[in-house]
Amino acid sequence: MKLMTCPVNGTRPVSEFVYWGEIRPMPDPDACSDDEWAAYVFNRNGAPGVKKEWWCHTPSNTWFIAERDTEKDFVLRTYLFGDDR
Amino acid sequence: MNAPVRISPLFDVQAPLARNWTTRERMQVVARFGADEATKRASAGIGDLSFLHRTGVKGAGAAAWLNAQGIDTPAQPNSFLQMADGTLVARLGLTEYLIEDAPGGTRAAALMAQPPGERVYPVPRFDAALVLTGTQIPELLRQTCAFDFSTLAAPALVMTSMVGVGVTALTLDSADGPVVRLWCDGTWGGYLWLTLVEVAGDLGGGAVGVEA
Image (tube, rainbow over all chains, first blue to last red):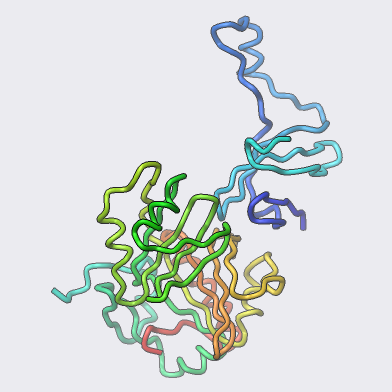
């Protein structure tokens, strides 16, 4: 059983969670070039590595951020939005 | 005026199995499913408490607003307290609360009749509310839920997934053994109830009515 640690509810089976994709900062649509905007809209980074991702603990609807190594499938840490230190 | 006007989210799945009906808090509920309910209740009884009135509030101002309405609030997320009149107050997150009346209570209705304060958002609750009783409940939980309830010291509140349904579970110790309260979204309630009743049937238990 894979485990994921929710910052509020603790360590739970990963079946209680949903994955909502990598955190991708949006470029300013008024200031960026068309290429930058198209890359933001259409392109996703599939290269393995440490990524920040949105996850949600569905029974409590707790959204949080997980830093996950997508090559080794290893979760380095999880924290609530705004608690990044 | 005493005709039932509320309907349990479990009505459709309970109706084929029910033997007698009664009315609690103006909701039509099953009084008895069968003759041997005392045995089932002592082993693994699944009861329906959806008829209790409940409501929720969330938002940064929720705790202060509830306190101003005379409702105590738990200090920690994922914890609960029971007020002197039996009202159950559960803190489901940093700023979200579930308030459930004791039988005959009126606090939930009174809260919903109030205009919400600043940064307070009402959360109408249409939960299926179950209660599990009996000596086989730890085994029932082991078969239906990946969360290990034996790591909890009752009383405790935990939000987890049971047979694939997101539930809020509250474990209590009583003189008759462990008691677990469950709340889940009403639309999933029928599936959760049927599944738990089937598993409980293998453990010598089953559905019990409110008069058992």
